[in-house]
Image (cartoon, rainbow, N blue to C red; front, side, top):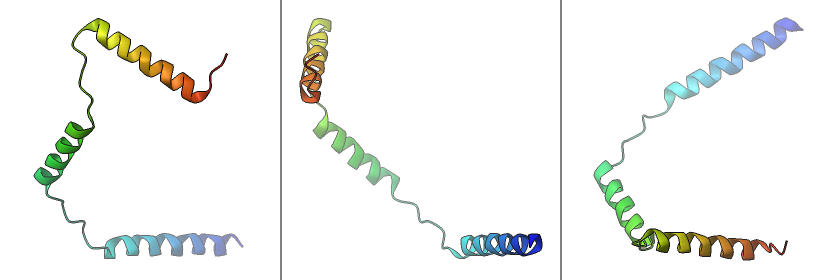
Amino acid sequence: MKRLLIALAGALGLRALLRRRHHEPVTEAPVDELREKLAAAKAEDAPPEPATVDERRADVHDRARRAIDDLGGDA
């Protein structure tokens, strides 16, 4: 029984190895084009940064309060 399991495991391993070797290599995507798309997406989604520490603090507190309200935190 052990020999059968060992042979089966070996056959599956060999099959996996052969399948890996027959795949075509992955083509590289144009890096510059992807970087431009990422920069454009970040520019569209980025909210304007508050200028002062107090404005940033107030913004963080507002977002936290909204998150708590969304979660239904009536505690």
